[in-house]
Length: 209
Image (cartoon, rainbow, N blue to C red):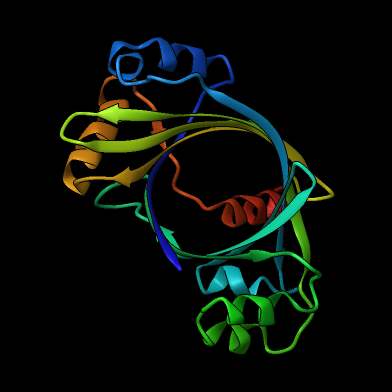
């Protein structure tokens, strides 16, 4: 189990990533080239979206010939630090949807996962096909964070929408310093915080007319 601490922002368009990367308070802290890769994420849930109702995300990311499961448990802060997201994460290789709960339990996932699913089938509820561009920010005071831009299409099967997001994930260092740095994107770049998880966004898309 690991803990992810990150800030999520909505971008007005794919072009905006270039603008952010050129800003001095970003560019001065990037020492390495950005890594670019394409991937497909498939999100699983029960028919009534029980995992989503209990703040769980079950994602299978397909990239480079491998499929990795990430189970996340957490909720985006929409009040005190909008866009701030802290989650517990459990990883395992993906074999099939029938065994994924047991596979995650073997990796230390909470036992309540089995209770929530209750033996019901897990099936794909939406996909996200995207390009990911990322680099490490070498910030002052030994603070390290990953800056990531994701540009893609969220597809529920019946409806699809483009999605442009930026994530800054804390890798090492003081959380208060990390939060202060991320708030600059809200104050100086006038970015909007992400207030919905991918599942919540997909569910809203499904229910929209």
